[in-house]
Amino acid sequence: MQRLEFTQPDFEQKLANFCAVNETPRSIVDAVTGVLNAVRADGDAAVCKFTERFDGVQLTPQQLRVPPAEIRAAADALDDETRAAIEGAIANVREFHEKGLPQDWSGENRHGATVGERFYPIDRVGLYIPGGQVPLASTIVMTATLAKLAGCPSIAACTPPGKDGKINPGLLAAFALCGVEEVYCIGGAQAVAAMAYGTDTIPAVCKIFGPGNAYVNEAKRQVLGTVGIDILAGPSEVMIIADRSVNPAYAAADLLAQAEHGSGREKLFLTVPDELTLDRILDEVARQEPTLKRLERIRPVFDEGFLAIITLDLASAVQVANYVAPEHLELQVKPESLDLLTREITTAGAIFCGHETPTALGDFAAGPNHTLPTLRSGRFFSGLQITDFLRRSSITRYDRKSLEQAQPIVRAFARLEQLDAHGESLEIRLRDDT
Image (cartoon, rainbow, N blue to C red; front, top):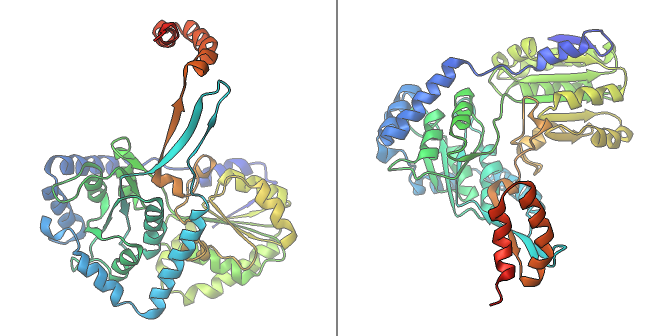
């Protein structure tokens, strides 16, 4: 754990050092390049080879795809409580993102021509769902629900198999409830390669969504351009801005929840007005920590990835938050401070307001998406939204009258940019009397 005071002379440098993004190691870059090249060249054979090497599972190309009947059976086997939870999350996610669905529109520009936009679903999307240490059924909800809402006609999903060669039944059930029937037992960079380049078994997709480890992230980076991607998400982050009204038990619980994700590289930020408030929260962390199942994953995060900051006031907390651009921002402050903070903090991926709003609500249930920018990329990226599953085309239609109105602008730009053929493409139409 590190402690900083906003007033110390080297505060900005120490904050920058803590937030610094390390370059992907050359060993990972080269390993991923090798996987991508092999899958591009050898298709299913390479996918099966890497699945055996990295997951310890021998599969034939015919075994890569999960039979749709097996997916449906997993949903049928769900207990009522889990089914209701997944269906409730789907409903909230759908209702939230419906409000962001763009509408086709048309109108007239200043020349009297018709202009507008039309939106189209991406033809085929690929979802990468981590399988590793925990079955992230919520990631299926957060991606597949949007793909369905956008109207994407084809949805494929990849998730790594367990040691028995099977996918966690909870994941299969979530796929079924989200309406995804094309699921493959493939993880890692080889899954990204298969979706990007296609194989005999797996048709290529147009865009890949979903988080993963460093190898998956690097694979997505390298295939960008061949396909689209959502974002390059790093280890999870949370920042809690707390004032003296904070309930220390709540703040501690939310820090611990973020630390248990499992990579060991999660980042925890806590801003407090004084040492006493900090100590009360740390005491609660120490009290709650031993009761948790994933303690071996949590402790390294608190040792290496936890930064506590004593701020002067809420204005200084705003400065810190806008610099960090945290993935998740919790405002555990008095209600009268919430409006100011949500207006002034402009770089957070998702903001959770008030003492009764833990980040876990955003992870699972509330409706806003949990696929969010990390590593300070909230300065220029936003969380996953419905428009990420859509294409937009602008529509333009001129007639002779509106073309005449545009002539001075086109003529002037053609002369300015020395592109005489551009100007002539308009003039030839205006000279034509037919």
